Amino acid sequence: MSTVEATIDAMAETLRLLSDKTRLTIIALLKEKEMCVCDIVDILETSQPNISQHLKKLKMGGIVNETRRSQWIYYSLNVADKLYLTEILNQLPSMRDKINAHKPNSCC
Amino acid sequence: MSTVEATIDAMAETLRLLSDKTRLTIIALLKEKEMCVCDIVDILETSQPNISQHLKKLKMGGIVNETRRSQWIYYSLNVADKLYLTEILNQLPSMRDKINAHKPNSCC
DNA sequence: CAATTATATTATCAAGTGCTTATATAGTTG
DNA sequence: CAACTATATAAGCACTTGATAATATAATTG
Image (cartoon, rainbow over all chains, first blue to last red; front, side, top):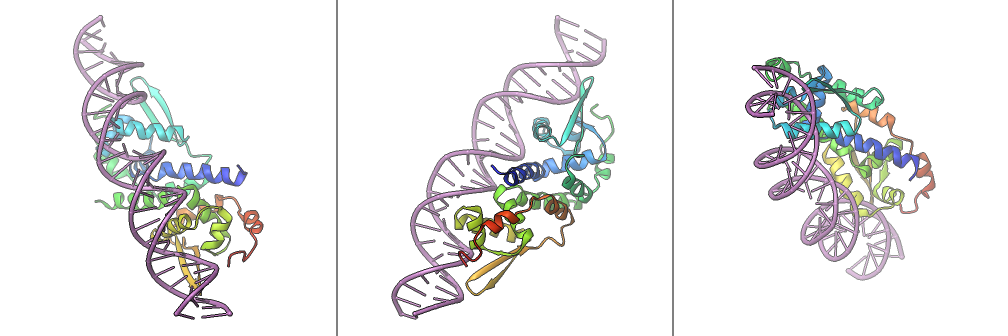
C-alpha cells in the first residue's frame, strides 16, 4: 500500500471515530475538562456500558487518555498530534451549560 | 432537540461522509481539480456504480457540487461553509501523482 | 471479608453500510 | 433512429456498528 493510501486510511479511521453522535459529544465534553466515566454517563443520560465502549474505541484510536485515580478512571483529550482535529474541536459547541446542569460529584 | 445537539448531529453526519476510505480519496482528488465520474473510476480502479453512489452521498451532504457538461458530469468540492473541513483538506496527501499517472481523457 | 461503587467485558441483535451485479436513463454520434 | 458512451438507480448480500442486558473485575469502606 502506498504512503498516500496509508495516510488516507489512517485519517478515515480517525474521522470515523468522530463521526458518531455519542462519541462526538463525549469529545465536546472532554474539550472542557477531563471527566470520569460516571460524569459522562450522567450528563449524556445513557447506559454505562455504552459510554465505556465508546471510550474504549476513542482510546484505541489514540484520541483520549485514561488515568485511574482510586476507583474513578478519568479520561482526557489527546489530540496534540492530529492537527486537523483542532479545528473540529474549535467548531464543537460549548458543553458548559450541560456540565453545569450536572450536579458535580453526584456520582463521584 | 437543543441547538447543541443539532450542531453535533450535523457535524457527526458530515464527518461520517469523510470517514470512508473511498470517499476521502475522492475528496483528495477533487481538492486538486474538478473531475467527471469516469476520471475518478479510472484513478481509483473500482466500479462506476460504486463511485456514483459515493458521489451521491457527498452531494446529499453538501460536500460536492455537480455540473453536467454534455455527456459528462463534473464534480467539485463545496466546502466553503464548513470551516473544520478546510484543515482536513490541508492534511490530505497530494494526489497529483495518481492524477498524472491516469491518462487524461482516456475515458472522456 | 462482605457490601458497595465504578468500570469493563461479553453476548446478542436490529439497523446500517459498502460493494457488486443488473438494469435504466440520458446525451452523442453516425 | 440505432449504436455507443457516461452516469444513475435498484436489488441483494456480507459485513459492521451502536445499543442493551447480563456478568465480571477492581477499588473502597465498614
